[in-house]
Image (cartoon, rainbow, N blue to C red; front, side, top):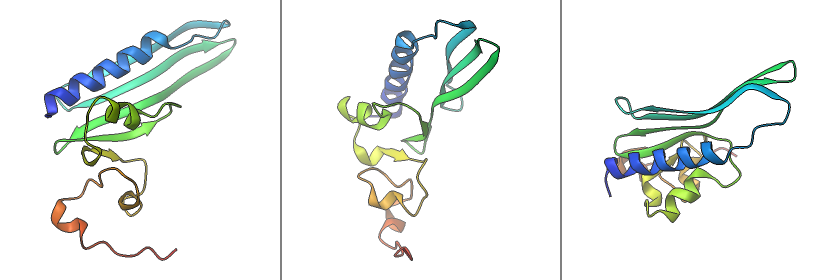
Length: 127
């Protein structure tokens, strides 16, 4: 599986989430938007608009592809983007949960984002 396949999966998942996003009844000028930056391999799912008299703006998902791996920078979904990617066939070692501290990532079932040669030299955490 390669980077181009990862791009397709990410675009597919974000587009699906955009289509099934619920818009509050009191929303005005409200939209759920996807942002696909294919040049820098950065992908976002955003919500923008007004609910009543309050402005809403936020990021539900932020993902990038670096060094052939999928880096999940933010995941505000219940389903979990990493779980969905694994269901699609992406190896866990190719998914980095970047929202965890680098020292914590070694304790997840997913990739650490470090070169393989440095992964065996991990230090024990003080807690």
